[in-house]
Amino acid sequence: MQRHVAILIWAALGACVLTAGAIEPARAVEWATWRREVASEPIELPSPAEELDATPVGADAEKPAPAEAPAAPDEKLAGGESQLTDDALTVGADVKLLPRWNNGLEFLSTNKEFRVHIGGRGQLDTTAYTAGPGPASPPADGGLNPPLSGATNWRRARLRADGQMYENYEWLAEYDFVNQLTITAQSDPTLENAVGPYVVPTEVWLTITKLPLVGNVRIGNQNTMTGLEHITSDRWLNFMERSFLNDAFFSPFNNGYAPGILVFDNALEDDRLWWGLGIYKNEQNPFGFANTAASNSYQARITGLVVDDPDNARWTHLGLCALYQQCPKTQQSGTPGTPTFQRGSFRQRIRGNLRNAPPGPLNSIYADTGLLDAADQALLTAEYASNWGPWQFQAEWAGSFIPKARTILNPSDNAGLQPLDTQITDFFTQGAYCEVMYAITGESRAYNRAQAVLDRYVPRNNFFRLGSPRGILTSEGAWQVGARYDWVTLDSQGVNGGMLHGLTMGLNWIMNPNARMYFNYDFTYRDFTNSRGRNGSGGINGFGARMAFDF
Figure 1 (cartoon, rainbow, N blue to C red):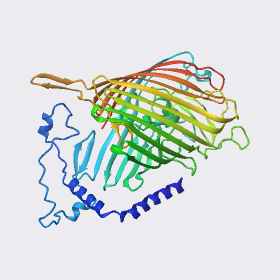
Figure 2: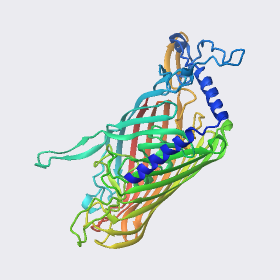
Figure 3: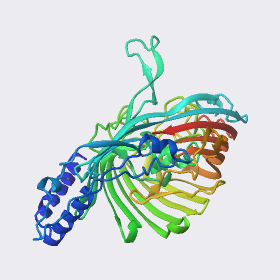
Figure 4: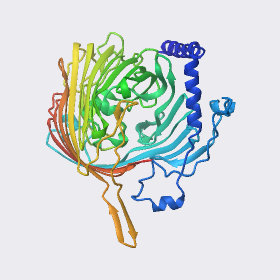
């Protein structure tokens, strides 16, 4: 991938250099005029008194009350000469940042050329479960492994900084403090064997915008493009967890983030079309680390708004994403010529729709193909999402295809029923989900055209409770109910990874744009026989609640 990265970077820089001197005079005039207009738009903040008088609570947070702005100088003298200095048209001349609240603490320059946002998120979960005889059996008899148990834990705890600078650059650096890995002392495993938190990068990237031909180029650790629910931020998911598809296909072992290069842009009127082409490393860890020149993932996504009626809060999104990737080549194990010798690695495993631990080895595994020796994988996903007033609908399908694979595991508790050292052709797994949400308080779901994903859910009225001379003043916030059905099968060509059917029902209380509560009930039926021939099929009931906030 290093050679590919170098070629793409030099090609992008070369295109910038070649076109920099080819801007038409008329375009240059338009640029200068636009810069004058931007420079004459000061950032206006409300006074403390205006903030106290604002009703309802938080209503003016994103749109501050205007203050008196200094009169802008006339752009031209009588003779037609500009009064603006060269500094007013110089990129980076105005670096004075003024604070404001915009769903988080934000600093913005007067001409909006520089922006810095300091923020983060926290999600605290509590869950409880009951299970039938099969899933509740010991792991050796086909039961869940690790065994299922209720828990209270931080699902996510992240800090981030993001912004823009010098007109053409956007950046983001975010780290998650709640990921768990097994810690074992190499000198004496019996002395230290525990699970501890590790800080991992989620999104750490730089984007160069407004480039000719390609539009935008993003380089760094970032969301891969597979799955609408995957690339929609977890800050405003409809349910506590994404569907089974996320574990099986979209973000199996790297939290859904990978180092790579993405080229993307919008097209058509009102940016109704979005397209992207990316090359990423197919790493199997959350650290953005890959120690091989192979295992590249090539991805392409295209989406469109086939219905676009913002005046009536109606829109419909359709999308397709295709992926071809090489399985990691360096994770060799065993002795050449033996059944357990491994050249590449591929595994699909699925956790529940309610998690009983932070990301890591303590989560119960519901379905698992076990480790396969495979060279490459193709993946296709189809996306649908629609908003119709207070109603929201969403569905996706994903299918994975591996031309050739080989079973390499000895019998184990987790892996599906499969014979050792069996050659497999046309290994195909698939899954889908569909969900419907209804806003009891009448809100509509916003759509982000710049990334072709669902956007932040904003209540009509924020929840608050205040004393006043007229008594207690209060507002209910936003309330939303919904249901989701999801299904996935990891059974193919003699590999019985398991089949899952899930029904999730949810009640969401969105107190304000930055804080919400989730209440979920989930029933999952598990059809699974492990590689020892023990049947662990049966139903699993889960109850969960989450307190979530971001800033």
